[in-house]
Image (cartoon, rainbow, N blue to C red; front, side):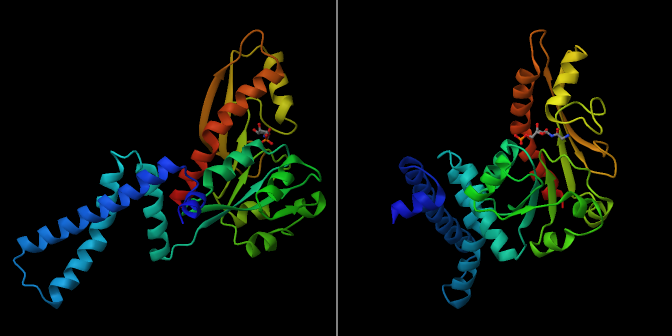
Length: 282
Ligand code: GAR
């Protein structure tokens, strides 16, 4: 049983022991607090006492477990656990994200990992335009459906909207996707498509500015800093409202490759968290 729980919650033995201790102490605390409250209300034991006690337990349990989880260092686990329960009871649907990517997919992997086990969000589809791209292997490894798209069909009209609807996609994330997003798609997902660009927009953006071309241009212009921009997608390349930027220095001896590494580190550190914030805003 413990083995199954460890696998299910992806935790080690010590972590599991702290989780069980939190459950046990949280449960006892909430039972104790419930009885104390009923004592203060001077209620006689009877049906209404039992009903009120059950109601108090339901209401106090999350608070008690969260309180106990703090000294045990399990706050993050229980915050997620309670959010998952709340999600089930409230009937709120998970937001299903489609990641559009056509490269190695390092950002896609970080995004998948970030939302693994999330009660509210899940990467439900990978859309790719490049047969053999690394991101397709990631989709296969992670058991996420992948859609390989054709340029003409993608750019002309609403050909792929049906596939996105079928997969109940509510939000689109571009992570190394280089084609311009067609207007039909933008209209179908207003303020629900975001992109990451490996430079500090509005500089070094636009058609042809992607991946290593961006870093080469920055090195050629002897820029002292670069960074990442996360922005809403509109009809123009790298143009929509900027949501978040983070900077890094460019040293004299940096090359396009070394700069690309710094940029990837920034992307991996920030993109998933920004996606989560925007998705939560609704
Ligand atoms: C990322 O650096 C992303 O910013 C860039 O492609 C890379 C994809 O890397 N996107 C653009 O240049 C868009 N204009 P990844 O495949 O390892 O995630």
